[in-house]
Image (cartoon, rainbow, N blue to C red; front, side, top):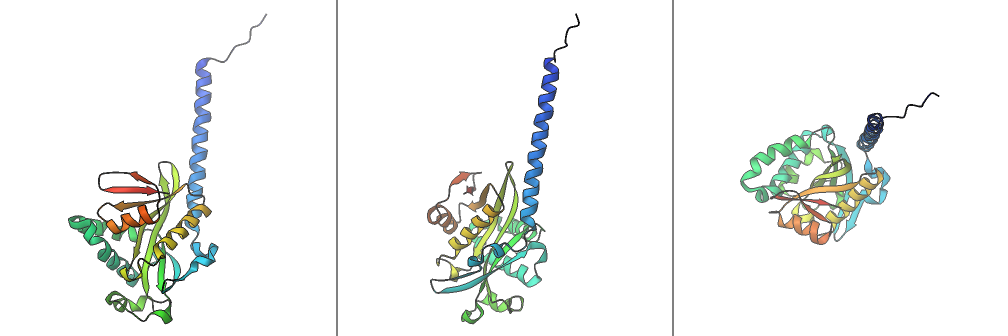
Length: 231
């Protein structure tokens, strides 16, 4: 009588490895497609019309979305000027190095921006920076801040990573920062991101207070100089 040959343990292990490898590849493909699809949306504000403008606490602004590789030269100058004003002190002696990094990060194709423009008829007060860069925003109202974010992968999870949230001092403490972060969370949710993440300098007390106390989002220590805050 002919006996049946039973699968060997080695054969079963190989089959399990192939199945597991296939699952890993399929998961990676799905995540890559998710990030690619999210990055392809050039106007996230189109899905959230109530967030196109903010008119509260004596502040009237509207938002515009742009991509890092499409920024005009004057807007690039504005970004770096505001970054220097807001971040040179927290970074201290590390700022010259960080400035170069931020200049490179600013214009990569995957960089996404939401610019905050003052409503034109409300622009009664101009800072030195605004007078310098008027030609880049004449038709939209003066820029008073921006969010720089990207869709990326962190620890095998698709996330919306906030690289910068920068506002001019005169428009801070008016609820605008919280409004922008609410928009960011909606954009992340719409695009099926697993989290919103950002890094904050411990030395930046204003930012630490904003994220940890006003927004009350969870925190996770990444290294000795920064928090990675995840909501």
